[in-house]
Length: 278
Image (cartoon, rainbow, N blue to C red; front, side, top):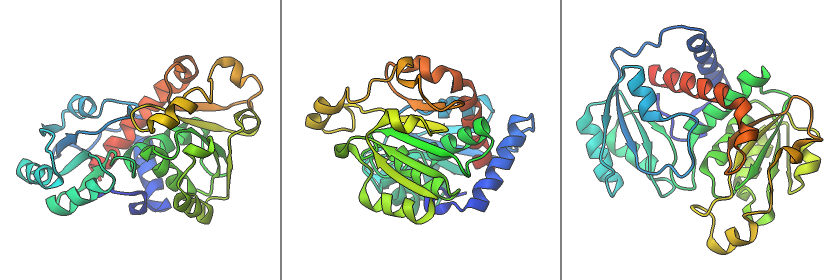
């Protein structure tokens, strides 16, 4: 299947992918014997829960790792030459993965295009929350940190909106979600709030996804001012809602993320294989 933006997804399509990923997690063999995957992963500023290339190879998928071409046209030409069933592509700037897909005419799974969208990572996070909490509907899900420049946050907000989740965008104003994306989320999600008050939001939140305020994607002046705006330690979560699960990536928060890491990795593997099957 083609997955360039969250707009390529519907709730029904996601539910079908989740159902197939459930089967894979429960021991069903992925149908991958005829699959050949091209890997063009030149821009991965935030880590995925799993190593995409290693996961494909561990499943005995025939993989072709492509050199990181300087332009979408070069990458598209390499994907065409690989004669692949689909391609996992990450490339900057925003919109470049769409351009590559148009030029190569091969189904593409977008693994991040600059500060634009990362629907592959969003599906992994959404499915991990689904497996940990049993549903996405009627949950309060918080997105914390660098929401302005994190493509994976943009796509996750759109994906969760399809399930009418309650969304809390937790960030200082300088790193807030782009206005157009917030408007889109409000059109679909049950509720959207914007706040910088983590302590208050944690008291009502079922799942929290971390998007690190990092020097790679945040402007130097903003980063210097806001890099320690949130300090995430176990003490931060003393008054959090019972049953809160925490996902994502944040330097220094390994202890907080450790309880969900095994499930996040299993969920990421299962949804990736379900997508490659499709």
